[in-house]
Amino acid sequence: MLSLVLPKGSLEKATLDLFDAADLTVRRSSDRDYHASIDDPRIARVRFLRPQEIPSYLERGLFDVGITGRDWITETEADVASLGELQYSKATSNPVRVVLAVPESAPWQSVRDLPEGVRISTEFPSLTARYLAENGVKAMVVPSYGATEAKVPDIVDAIVDLTETGSSLRKNGLRILETILTSYTELVACKASYEDQEKKAAMDDIALLLRGAIKARGHVLLKLNVPAARLGAVSGMLPAMSSPTITALASGDMNAIETVVPKRGVNTLIPALKAAGARDILEIPISKIVE
Image (cartoon, rainbow, N blue to C red; front, side, top):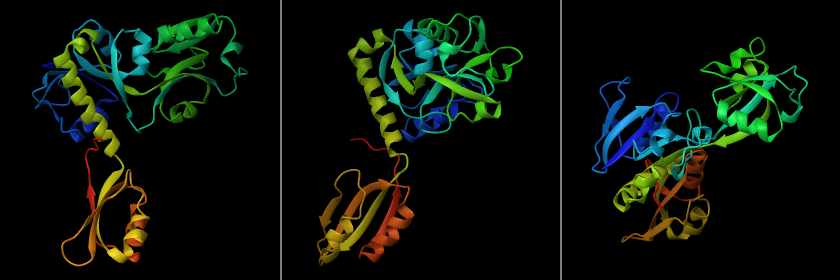
């Protein structure tokens, strides 16, 4: 039913891991294959393309739905329908930033300090030109095709580049002057496809699965048995996403508790629960949380 386009390159592995966790495993003959499939009746065709190309192809109706970054949607000014942010990136769950960076020794403290004719290298020439114009800066914008940070200072005076942690910029003697755009990965669609009710329903299903997989990251399911006399003390220790499920067992005065908790800290939580009277504690990994 749907034609799906996924990002090739730095986001590729994180995207494949996400789809796998969402039970939408992407299958292809090799890592270099640009064609793939998903064993799901809602998805008829899967392609891999560079994320900067994806918004324009979706706008033109060459694909129904795809994943790209808000940075490339803004750069291309593509008219697409957003199904919402997917909060993951190549290294963390944090957003990436499009930043204006200058040499550590540069005297400039804001974008408006940049002198006329300043040379700026970037993979986002349209976004950069619009940003500079809005701030009254007349600059020479030089398109870049990789290793942008290595072009300062002998080729250009400053750069506009994408960063997740800022570490690469610092290693190259650069400091961030301004953040131009904060960008999450997004699930976006061709507007005409999204207006088709059957396709929209399929897209919404896929979005639900992907968001559920992201929400489950860093969480586990705890199952434990608790004597009735210790129920209040134990349940009060649980940092549940919502109220824990408590079921009275048929035999004796025991209660069964099920709850989802953050994985971080569970190493200290389990011994504390045991000390408070919990028994038969199970920690179970989860792949999706759908509310």
